[in-house]
Amino acid sequence: MLIRRLLLSAVLLAVSTASWAKKVDLDYQVRFLPQSGQAEVSLTLEDGSQVKSLSFNLGEQGAYSDFATNGKWNLSNPQQGVWQPAAGKSSLSYKVRINHERAPGRFDARITPDWALLRGDDLVPAAKLNQLDKTELVARLQFVLPEDWKSVETGWPRIGKNKFRIDNPQRHFDRPTGWIVAGKVGTRRAKLGETAVAVAAPVGEGMRRMDVLTLLTFIWPHAQAVFPRDPEKLLIVGAGDPMWRGGLSATNSYYMQSSRPLVSENGTSSLVHELVHVFSRFSAKDKSDWITEGVAEYYAIELMRRAGGLGEDRYQKVREQLIKWSKPVKSLRTDHSTGPVTARAVLLLQELDREIRAATKDSTQPRSLDDVARGLMRLDKVSTKDLVEISENVMGRASKVLDNKLLR
Image 1 (cartoon, helix red, strand yellow):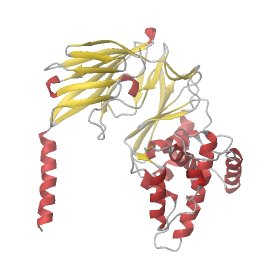
Image 2: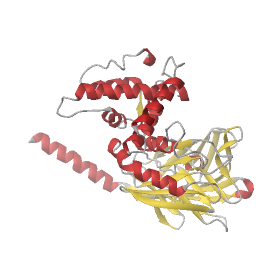
Image 3: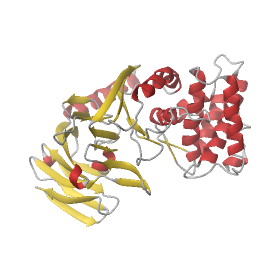
């Protein structure tokens, strides 16, 4: 009884503390400047006295310029700037270069006279927030578009014309992360489960918006069965050359080059691969990128199979191609998984799935690799050790599949 009263008191204290928090508006404004290849960004705090400082990681030299504030700005080195807001209403403004080549001649951020496609992570760089206790920032994002640009879309909920609410419970400093597309843009929308899905791309860039929505409609319930998430919104963006030829995911959105097939000749799908990244939301540590990429590619195949888009004969041919492609691989341990490493990781995960199913088939609750995936998605970063421990916990015994020189 005493323990119950103590727990109740702790809950009430947490609720009371949250209600005492002073809410301070943080308004972002983004103005695109196609003629200079930049965007002008401003951050405005309703009450700057609640924030002691924001220390920004400015990354690549020259990406950010023309800083101005009514508080204090200290550029301690080319990669770090510290903003100390003034008391009362306080603003910081700057310009950011948009065009960025991920590889020579291939862009992962681009602005043209008609549109812009980029990640909000680059508009507002990562920062360390130092604020007064019991302060909660309430962030909103507003775009000011060139006169002939029609619309803008982000992975965040829309709260007005070209305006979005930014709320990430895992962060103290809410910034507009994820993909953004603006300009002369075409968008198709659907409600899948509890999620508002938007597929948006600049007009004339060859994005097959309805094809994407149709494939996602088939895949969605199977993806949710493995990864039980109901994001409020998901944005998929794309464009053609010279944009990056591949897929790139964020927490609430992802990018697909419009020339990429929805299903490749080898039977896998980059579209589904990136969807798995969005749903699983874990990254790797300790040379274990084979897990993040292997799980994404495993389910890019498996979800297509479960949705009826991949028959048994085609599935076996996919396996044959994976075996042939991954033959030279001697180890899976790496910080950056290549194609052959990912292929070998998929084969190992398929073997692990069969081992788990065989070990638990006579139990009251048969298990599979799905149970391992759900365990992994509870972690922010995963290691090979984590995968082994979760798998053996699911099976109730040691794994012969994971006792493998590839993992050493």
